[in-house]
Length: 50
Image (cartoon, rainbow, N blue to C red; front, top):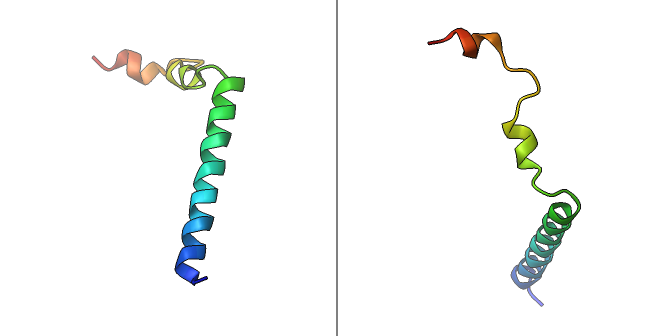
């Protein structure tokens, strides 16, 4: 078994783990991107710029 084949197997396993983790986080937290789009306090600079 060559190192290249072993590296490919490890890379595929890592990708599978990352994809599974992201999928699990999406199930536990519905749309975490909305919290980033809505700032808690609007900056006064953006309001004055016009």
